[in-house]
Length: 316
Image (cartoon, rainbow, N blue to C red; front, side, top):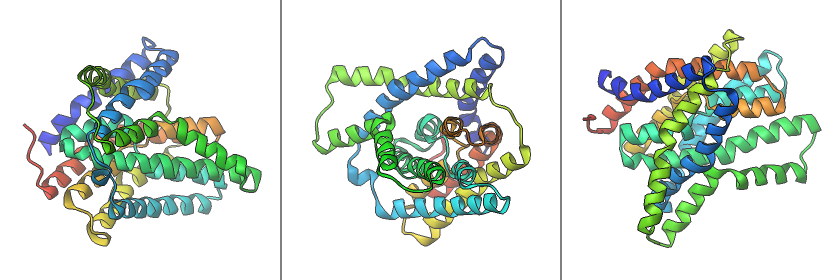
């Protein structure tokens, strides 16, 4: 546990550095927005493309893996939704809270950290989970919020969802990488060097951007934020673990990666959606802040357990 904690500490130290830079005003909100845009559209896309280009679709896609992950996510999603309805929240607020409960910071934090802590073989399962989050749940929240406001489904709504997926650089980079791999095309040395240099900026840039963005978030509405944090850091990995280890025939290593990724804190893009639609942004903000702080300890506990379970060699 201590060894894993010390390995995760530099990742969270970078988040802390970004937080301090944002809190003191040295790094403005505008600067954070541009750094996030650079990571999202360029550095992280280069990293994801390189990972995907070195995998085959058969290494990434597995029906049992997909079924286990979606089963665990949907169970927690329904629990969070039911609690929101019990508190007499509308469909739009329930959708946002459920999103907090199951969508972790897989792109900015999970991809770089889990590959380091669990080995290069973790890239495939993490990319699969990232794609499912983006395709299934990012679409679902848009459909629920927009549909609840319009009172019906429409072709324009489905068109909006489809265009959103097509324009998402993470989806595009993963898809292009898998297509490249499917044709067994070698990446030219010059291009590989370029992608390597650009992709190397993803980890420090993403972690710094997470911290800087947290500086502008408040810890208001602690009771609901605490509940959503519990959903994300405890219920979500527990449900995914039950699905992957008991209900579905998922390999031990893939189950370990799935559980570790499910234990990640609430993703920042949930706040972007909440703010865009004007639905409970302060609640989401507090959930991101609290879950990120607590995950410094909880993610170490989870990774230490799953590494031992999967027989992953101790980190040197």
